[in-house]
Amino acid sequence: MGLSPGAEGVWHAYFYTFERPSSDKVFIRGTVNDRGRLEFGIDTFFIPEGKGFIIDRASDVKVRVTVGTTGEAVIEDLILDGVPFDPSLPPNTITKKEPPPIPPESTPTPVTPAR
Image (cartoon, rainbow, N blue to C red):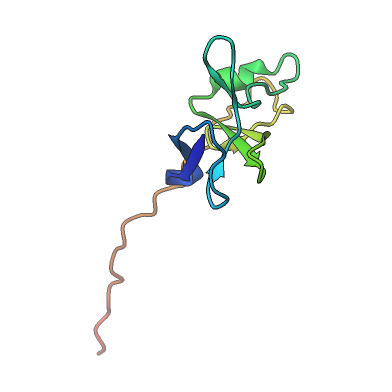
């Protein structure tokens, strides 16, 4: 599967082929399973027992993957609502990343006339 960069560092598939792409293309090597589905070896991520609630609370889940020159992909990290997965968070912790504060509108500084 050939990949191309997209917004916010997320890469997207843009072609599938049974042949190895040219060396200047980024690709993930996969296989077709007995059900006709593509598998890339990145479908499993270890979650410590009792920590699945952290993922369940997330509204946006992404996986950071490293892809080698031969197309082999390895999961580097799980990103939940823009924050790397941290299994050490206590149960009451909200994992959502708060957006940065919006700066106040610029107001001109009053000028005191010289006397």
